[in-house]
Image (cartoon, rainbow, N blue to C red):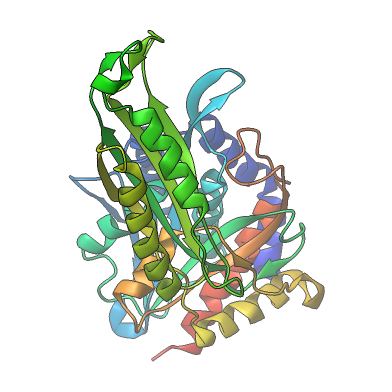
Length: 381
């Protein structure tokens, strides 16, 4: 325990330097090319063999021997968001994935340099495209998760949820579905609207219908239109094509199913009331978290060892989505949990000016290092 803490203290500048590099070289989903190169170079320096993939930008490092104990995965997401920042569209790390990669990298460095050897196999998983909701599937399709017994992740938390200096042994994210819709109408001159089918009218009806959807008020859930596009530069033309987006969230997976059924019915019915053609499909979806009590108990002990009893926070229940939870959905027997790390993050996740206390990176490395040591020691064959 003391060796981990001493190492983190001595490596503070290097840890923060890694974060600064990744933060200033952000790349969006599926295009994390330079990020992949950097991660590979870091794993080479640490002495961890790794593999890359032909069909995506993920990287997986391998350390240890699975015949000696459990197979444990530690996962960090890689991608940034595409955002308008100070009037310029750019890739922007406003969800903390730069910090996640930093903490996982230096956790492995820490354990290597203090002489730790896993009693089993450790897979270091750098996953692309979390923001697309499809990155976890790419890692699953590559067979990386097939033999995992445990999977550990981490996510920085907003200040509204958890302050700096605290951490939770899990994050109970809700289910999220992002829907993309199209409307087709008929163009006409603005002077003769009777000859056309105005998709703007359809959009207005869809928004009203979506806002009118009701569900059990004792269950956390929400649905809202988040994007609309229609028309062109000429204001005297009846628009014949529109696009729209809908964000759907629910605390539990079965509630999401109920909500989606209502959304599809409402959108198609309301949008086609003027005889327009409406198409709606899911662009991405993320399942709600399912708990892993045994592994959460191990991580809880690691948090106390790293931050003390005062650093242990209550597990947050959040409407945010995370494709990390898809791993356990696909492999129900997998013990998987995600550390919630207090960072004083503000104004909030996905805000273009999101920032957090960089000292939280040090806490994250300590917690992850303790958790990996404990899971291998506890489950050594």
